[in-house]
Every structure is written in C-alpha cells, then in structure tokens.
Image (cartoon, rainbow, N blue to C red):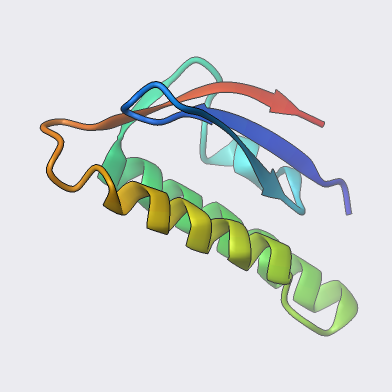
Length: 95
C-alpha cells in the first residue's frame, strides 16, 4: 500500500507531519485548505479509519500506525477546546 504523510499546522501555528498508510487522505483533505477543528477531526477520523480498514482487508489486521496517528491527532486537538474558532491548515502531502 502506498503510505504517505500529510503536513498540517495546528491553530497555534505548530507544524506536524502525520502518517497515513494509504493515499485516501487526499480524498478528505486538500492542500492549502484550512478546516475548522471539528471538521478536520471528522475528516481525519474518516480517512484514517478507511486506511486502517484497507490494511485489514489486505493483511488481516488493522493498521496500528493509522489508529495511533488518529489518537495523536485527537489528543492534540483537545488542547484547543477553549480556543475560539480553531482551524487546522493542511500544508502539504508527501508521498
């Protein structure tokens, strides 16, 4: 499976490279777009779950790296729960 990284910027300006075991993330996020935090979380959750499911269909077990990345995204997002109108910016895709 073609894995990739998607580079994001959190509402505080901190950059992060995130992992996906599949290119499916490109169907849910656009480079250069800023997403309200809740929307970014939903899109990431959907894409990384699909990616993990694809790994499971091919290899017989879910992708722990994709699920771990999702957990890291969700944990980092909690830091912005009191931030008014937090957005996450997608800087780049790296294949």
